[in-house]
Image 1 (cartoon, rainbow, N blue to C red):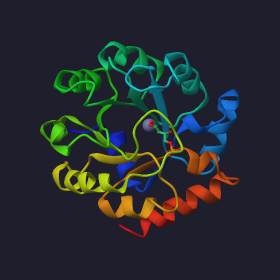
Image 2 (cartoon, rainbow, N blue to C red; image 1 turned 45 degrees about the vertical axis):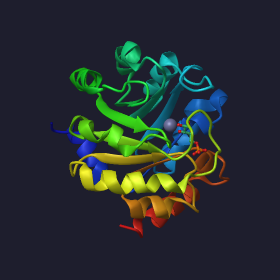
Image 3 (cartoon, rainbow, N blue to C red; image 1 turned 180 degrees about the horizontal axis):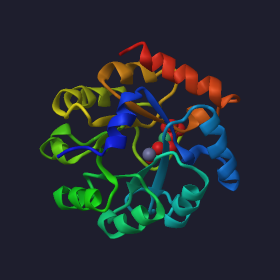
Length: 230
Ligand code: DX5
Ligand code: ZN
């Protein structure tokens, strides 16, 4: 199964730092988007939570639609919801470019991965820190992205779980060359290099970007630290 061309061109620009809007000021979202665009972001990470799959509620379809109006950057949409199949079409209609869902929510993910692709978005699987990498290995050919969680999903600002990098190393050997490997949770100046060395292409960073005084300086630093590992 071939990736979308834009996914391949994104991968060629690695290391990619994807600011996670969960850590942005929601009352000034368009402004925050402009600031990370100016800081060099090539992709934006959008966390969708349903209060059921994870114990928190965040962004929904209308917010993705509003984001779509203020940016041309790809929206990397991370569904932390129990029934991603039900909401795939609405999120894609709203402007999601990627749609990532959890293997724990959909243990037999083939049909949903294929349906996301047929609807025009790049499909990806996510695995929680406690989920063995074997759970996703049979489906890698259907994925344009594979996201390894390095914290328990639900909240920003948690400590990075370094042990998940063993799974990243396995994934790096197993995926097609054009698949984007991403990591989410606790990424910052102290952790980004280890993740890059393990084979990560795309680094989701919430607190590390939006908590910085200077977004440009912080994004450049994260990118430089990652690039040195390739
Ligand atoms: C957590 C979300 C993350 C979150 C990461 O469930 O999936 O995207 O924003 O936040 P930081 O970078 O602060 O750990
Ligand atoms: Zn996320």
